[in-house]
Length: 463
Image (cartoon, rainbow, N blue to C red; front, side, top):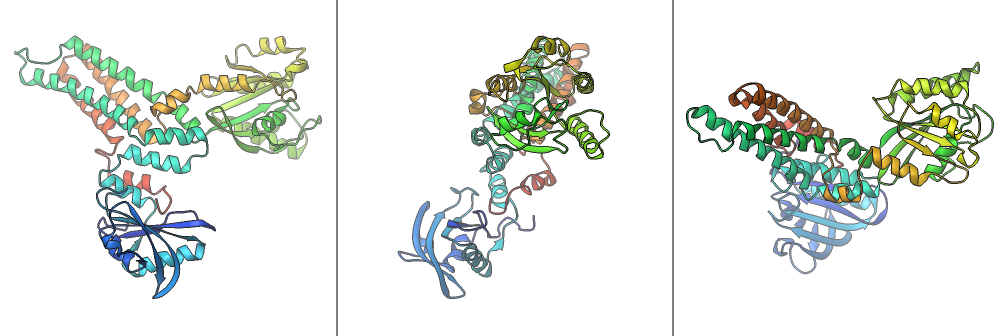
């Protein structure tokens, strides 16, 4: 970032466009002095306003009154950034907010970079890096579950959990160091067997936490899903029912869908990034052939495949080709078989027999009769176990950076456990030390500046 800590930064913190109010945030050593040149309180100067108090006044641009509004003063260190901060609320005109910001920049403030307010909160110790990332996730949340999870993680519970792993490993290290320094003395806190047991327990706990990553992404960002099947099995009706709209054309004519139709929907706590694809089959139609090729690519790129079958008719050769195509991805992506049209499911048991080796996740469905949504929600909760209790706890990994650190720590602990089992305790030192290093990186300790800058660069300006 271009601005050095110590400069006074300013930015519009509300979205662009018209609204009831706009908020311009100013933070830094001279925040109050800069704002006094722009905002004239009717009661007393901003420099005399107590912390966490709001005052009414007039706003000026180049000596001319342009608006009136409210200024709220937050004093260091009891502010979001840890610095003196002023938030000016004016009427929500886009040009009006721009003029207020311009006036502040002309009187000593500099433009804030994306995420700079939150970065300063991190650098001043007001937030850990995990909490700062939770702020970004909360801003970007597009589902209720995603917002609740981010709000839970703002408390710092995830960082505290990961930090506890590092503390437990450090306790093992103290015994190892004691063994190294005084090999002939029995002064270590833990015996060799206790070290192995503790190391195994920590490893299991870290694996348990890292295994929540798929659920975290499913809740916060969404899982890419392909809806595949032979022509006219009800893929478009399935999409329309989940989305609650007539997003895709539904007819009895095979080959109606010729391109990929995408829609984001929420089922329970899980966000699905659905792609309704053309029916996969051999065709001489040039346009439909392109659609089939795109369908195969969507299937390849997806993390979850909904494979639809029409239970009102016999299994066809096209259905079997679909099963064969999807079977290639067994073990590498989640597969849910959707047995559609079960309100007229003459061949339901035949379908079940055909897909018995494809996936354990089978949902009986009828888009026409609105049957199966609860079963689908239950199945998705089984694949991505993240109920209300887990969301409230905040102990779900969302960020790729945190997940990578946990997996790296897992690798180190596996190596350390092997050394403790096969060799002497001193041979595991470097692996345990590296495990601690990876875990501490999740909250910004031992993390380099490039990574920090990269995280905050994804924030909006004004946050």
